[in-house]
Image 1 (cartoon, each protein chain N blue to C red):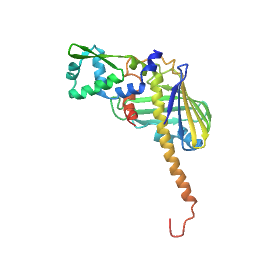
Image 2 (tube, rainbow over the protein chains, first blue to last red):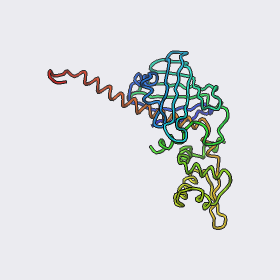
Image 3 (tube, rainbow over the protein chains, first blue to last red):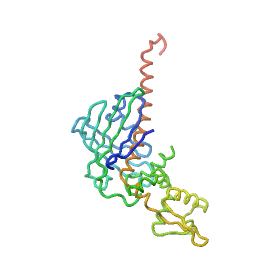
Image 4 (cartoon, helix red, strand yellow):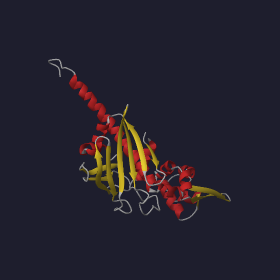
Length: 156
Length: 129
C-alpha cells in the first residue's frame, strides 16, 4: 500500500511504496517507453503519447485520455525536463500540466529508489504545489476525471 | 482552513463525490437549502436511494440536516470540498494511484522475467523443448 503525506510547509506531497523487485528493474519502468506505456495510465486513463530523453536537460512528455466518464476523450498533457538522473537510484524532473490553472507554473517530481531486503523502497516527492495559483472553488475542477478514478480507488 | 483540513477526511469526501447523483445533489444544494422531498423529486431515483445518498453525504459532512416542523431540510457544507480541492490533496491521490500501478506492473513483470531466466538455465533434454 502506498502511503502519502504533505510536508509541513504545505508545498510537497511525499508518497512511498515498497516494490518486490530490485531498483534497476523499477528504474526501467520509469524511463523506458514500452514499460511506461504499460502502467502509466492506470485503469481510467489511456496513454496516447510517452517520450523521455533520459539525460540531464532531456525532455519528457506524457499525454493521456480519459477512457470513460464526463471527461472522455479529453487530452491531458504533462511535460518537463530531466533535472537529475542517476540510475538506478534517482530521477528528478520538472513537471508541467496543461490542466494546472497556470500551465507555466513549474513543479518538480523526484523519484528516489533505495534497495531493501525485499526489493526497493520508492519515495516520490512532488514539490512546488503550494504556489499553484487559483485554488479550486469547486470539486469539478482540477485533475480531470479524478473523481471517477477515485471511485475505483476507493473501492479497492 | 488548516484546522478544517484536519477535521474532514479527504477519502470520505472523494468517496462521497464518486457518485454522479450525489454530485448532482450537491449542485442542487449550492443554490440553497432544500427539504428531503424536494431533493427526491428532482431526481429519477427512488426515495430510499436518495435517503441513502443523503446519509452518506451527511457522514462525510458535506451536507447538514435540520428539522423545520415535520420536514428534514438539507444544507450544503462546502468546507470539505475546499479542503480536497487543494492541489496537495489531489496529488496525494494521484501519486498513491500511480505508485500502486507501478508496483503491480513491476512485480508481475519481475516474476515473469525471473521464471523465464530460471527456465533458460535448466538444461534441456534432447527431443524435448
